[in-house]
Image 1 (spheres, rainbow, N blue to C red):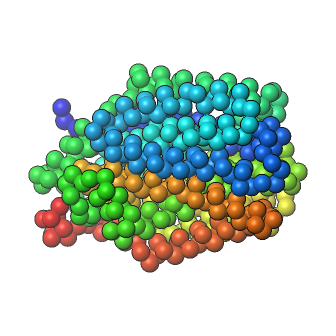
Image 2: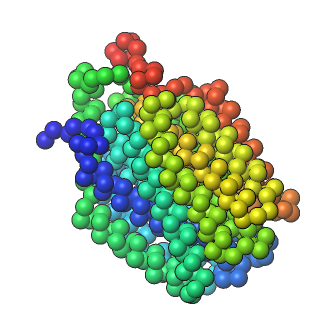
Image 3: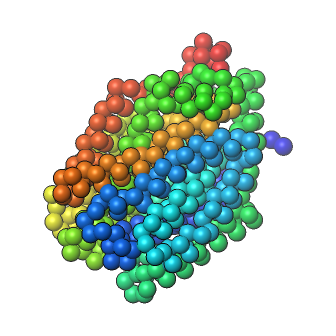
Length: 433
C-alpha cells in the first residue's frame, strides 16, 4: 500500500481524527464551568482555599503530562488507534464519580482518570495528523485539530452551565459526560484509521532521499532513541526544542486560570453560572475558531513570530482581566486571550512537527506534551499558593500574565524558525539526516 501524505489524499482519517478530538474537548469541557463554581457548595471545599480548589487541576495536569509521554512512546510500538481506545476506556468511570462524589477528593481522583483520557486520546489525534499531512500543511492540520478540540471545550462549558442552572448539576454532568464518552468510544472502535504506517513510510522516504521540496531541518538524534535520550533531547539538549517545551508549559498557566480561577473570581463578583459559561465560552470559542486561520497563517509566515505575538497578547488579556468590572469587559479580555492562545497553540505543535524526525516524532511530541500539560499542575499549584498567600484572587492573574510575558521573551532569544520553506536544511544537514 502507498502511504501518500496530504489532507485531501487522507480526508477520511483526517475527519475521523477531528471527530475524536471534538469528543475529547467535550469531555474536558464538562468540568469547565459547573465544578469550580460549585466547589464549595456542592463538593465541600473549604471556603477561600484556592490551593484546595486548584488540586483538581493539579492532579489532571500531572497525570496528563505523564500520559502524554507514555502514549507517545507506546504508540510508536502498538499504533495510534489502540492507545486512543485505551484512553476512552479510562474515562468511563468519570461521570459516575462526579455523580456520587461525597467529597472534593473524588473530583480530584476523577481528574486523574481525565488526565489519562486526555493524555492518550488528544495526543493521538495530534500525532495521527502529523503522520498523514504534508510538511507544508502542519499549521493548517494542527489549527483544525485544536479548533475542533477547544470548540468542544467551549461548547461543553456553555451547555453544562445552562443544564446545571435548570436541572440538577450532578445529574446534568453525569448524563452529558456518559453520553459523550460512549459515543467517542464507539467511534474509536468502529472508525479510526491507524496512521503509524504513514510515519514509517515517511521515515523510509526521507532516508532513501525520495522526498521533494524544501527539506526540514530535523534535529540530529539517534534513529531509534531510548526514552531517556528523547526526553533529554527535547527538554534541554536542543535550544529550540527547549524553548518550545518551556513555552508549552507556561501557556497552560492561562488555561488553568480560565478553568479554575476565573469561575471563582466571577462568582465572587456576583456573576451567574450562565454568565460564567459565556465568558469562559467566549475564550474557548475564539481560541478554537481563530485556529482555523492562525494555523494556515503559520504555514505562510513561519512559526516563531506568530507564537511570540500570541504570548504577549495572552499576557495583556490576563493582566487586564482583574482590572475590569463588567460582563462585556470580561468577555473582551477573554476574547483577546483566546486570540493569543490561537496564535501560539497550534504553531508550537507545528514547530515541533517541523524538526522532529518522523522515526521518533510521536515520542518527541509526547515529551513536548508532557511539559506542556505539566504546566496545568505547575501553574495551578503556583496560582493557588500565591492567591492564598496574598489573600486575593487577583494575584493569580498577575502571576500568569508576567509568566507569559517572560516565556515570550525566552522564545525571542532561544527559538530558531522551524518552517522548512523559510529555513530549509543545508546540504550538510541533508547528508547527516
